[in-house]
Length: 201
Image (tube, rainbow, N blue to C red; front, side, top):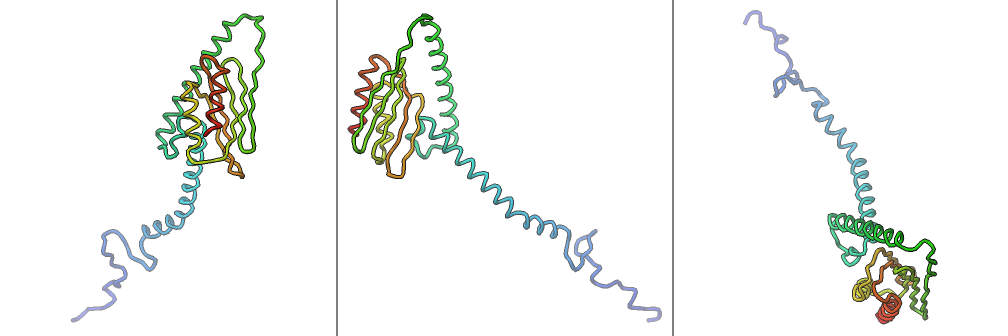
């Protein structure tokens, strides 16, 4: 075959299985982008994990501040948000009601001093300050399962409207619970009944 030369045929490495792309020793550009994304992935995963942990912690704090959620340790985030909204609405309504009561009082009316009630023994203590229909309970009891739920049932039984509560357990396994509640009717009598029933739990 006259005039035939091997140099006319290009080398196989210049051929690509996909039209419009050229193969080389380093591979395609999309493969390079994929490797770069994978290299950055662990850092973004770590940031996302941190963000979720912080959100979980904030939901737990929020749940501990809303009385209706204390009896539901596994409440969903949707319930935590909805119950918190309702709780804030109730507090705002109660605030407006108390402000209205305060404005209706005579200007020269003497301010009643808070009445203090106190009980302590070796393992338990209940301190109560009562003024203007609102009672502030400081409760300390030996921790046991479902104790907080039982305490709130006592308040509900005596129609005490719990406005705020805070719960913690110290190193000695002592439950420390503070409760702010509005008492209807004879507040002093209700306080004594609530104290007796809490201390008998």
